[in-house]
Amino acid sequence: MTGRLIAFEGGEGSGKSTQARRLADHLGALLTREPGGTPLGERLRDLVLDPPQSEAPSARAEALMIAAARAQHVSEVVRPALESGKDVVSDRFIGSSLAYQGAGRSLGISEVEAVSLFAVDGLVADINIFIDVDEEIAQKRLNRSLDRIELAGKDFHHQVAEAYRKIAAENPQRWVVIDGNVNVDEVTKQVMAVIDKRF
Image 1 (cartoon, one colour):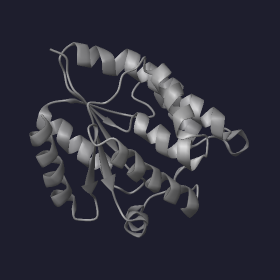
Image 2 (tube, rainbow, N blue to C red):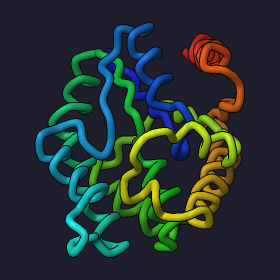
Image 3 (cartoon, rainbow, N blue to C red):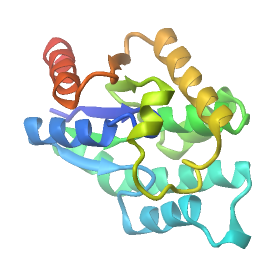
Image 4 (spheres, rainbow, N blue to C red):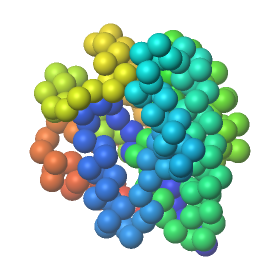
């Protein structure tokens, strides 16, 4: 029996990382993240999120670096775990590329999706849990130093949020929307209810 891949998606300050960790603990699943999850992926993550000022990648380079990190992540971590029967909870997956690079960077969702599916050899999440948070609330939660993408501006993050909502609405069989505006324990209850219903 193969494991299940559960991806948490959402904008900055959505609380998805906390929820991913809680669900992985609950399921006894492997918890991982993107970009990253492997030594190579973490190096690419640093180059994407916190590059030297003179080396910030272009939009297309950013998309390809994230796809490269994802290819290594799936090959080295995700697929072997799934094939061994272990569930995997990933803090971000293909949906992030569609929203951030496809919509936010205006590269085109279908174009970025094609690159992403090539990178993972067709692997898709069994379920994508999108934690939807009002942008004003999300901004108040970001009480740490911000990375390059978090600093991309209000218009960028608005486009990302709208893209997530559209993708989730168009793919109800693989996407679930969670209200992330409530307190963290209420969000967890919603997540657990979805998992109990789906799995």
